[in-house]
Image (cartoon, rainbow over all chains, first blue to last red; front, top):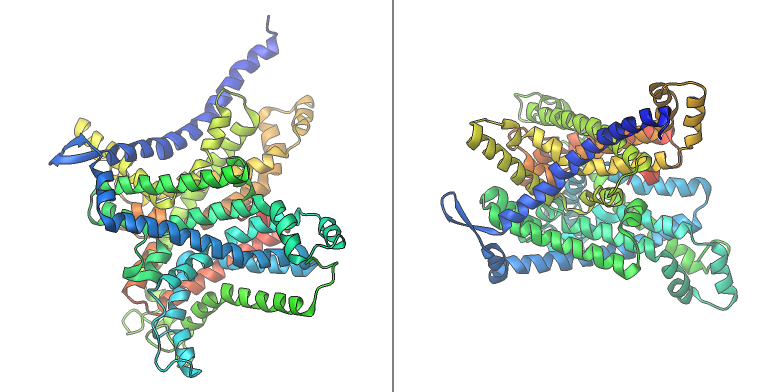
Length: 295
Length: 290
């Protein structure tokens, strides 16, 4: 027999649960789950006559049969992997310096210095790179002035330019998880390894990297995802040559109004992104929730 | 190598050199943007032709229309502020509700639901945009067919932009607020109940003040993420372009230094925001910012 107090508490708890559950369900169903179901349905149909559609795999067939589309897809994936690797290699020494070498004020100052550029919008940062790299821009003029090149060279619109932009935009998302992973590594482990005759390389390989692996994987997953889904940097720095997959999605959806094809492309990109995230988590034996908390 | 071990000279030197190069890489684009906002030339490019404030103050009817006379640019700046305010309010409110849902209630499927709450963070922004666009049009078309109802807010435009940005920014707000609520000592609330406080009083005098730093942090991050968002916005935008979309359009046409001027304005604004936050919350800010 429930007492007076629990009897009044039960409906209250239920009401509270309903009130708290309502916004979460509205958000997740209305803005995430159902829109993706809609996208899936769109991608699995084909227009046979005005306002008449039938179920078909035609959109996915187009993707396989049209070399431009799957070339762009593979290219985007490979460039993203490359950008992630470069970001990791560039970020590691800085993360190490901040986590292990810098002390006190220096440490927090270096950390804040890493953060500052990322408080500014990606548009502004890309504008900076355009001013630096375009034919009439700062670096080509500097090279002429130094006598290193006879005439200004166009540094925009190359694959390397896209990579520079992508690495730049992603840097913070690699540095932060690396710093937190390296800070949790006990210095005495490194000292012990050194006393036992380890050199820099073997310590890095056998102690530092295994310890920092969760942070490395977290950083790589986030950077890869952001790079794959980036639109602004490849289109502005790569121009017509960028051939980024998000651009294909935009073209199909907004320019050509071919929503069926655009939806199929969207699902392919989502599939690739999810597969890489899943593989990264499997490789490092981590849980999705932990990685997200970490970054 | 760590500080307590002997490091050869070449290693110490190369650490410093690499550090300098790295920070030059980080700051060069920003410095260039700021400097060329003041160059006395029609395009943001070298050589340096002298200092001018034309790109801020130039009148609307002159050849050099400055930022403060560029009504399209100022309008888009205002649009961005309005959108960001809506996204911030919605994200913090729903994020707080989500935090209490995760930390304070028990129901079947809670684990799955809290994982699903993180999903928007791994969906590329472009795809969030097109899926919401497609779903909203489906509902709008349905309402039109069935009841001849024109639901304009479901067509590309600012309401959809707000919903699109909200759909993933609320995940970040939820993470930030949940992390703080998790560390809350529930006995504080129980003590207040024992002393006869009502639920409302406990919430406003104990729980809410404790959550305040996380709420402010979540609000700042939400505002900034919304202000900077491009991918999702581009897919959902109607006739009123927020600042990032407007800047993108102009950058493709070939930019005048007005873009540098508005960029410098943004840099100063976000630096001020960052400073206020860092002052308020000395250590944890870095972790919360991402």
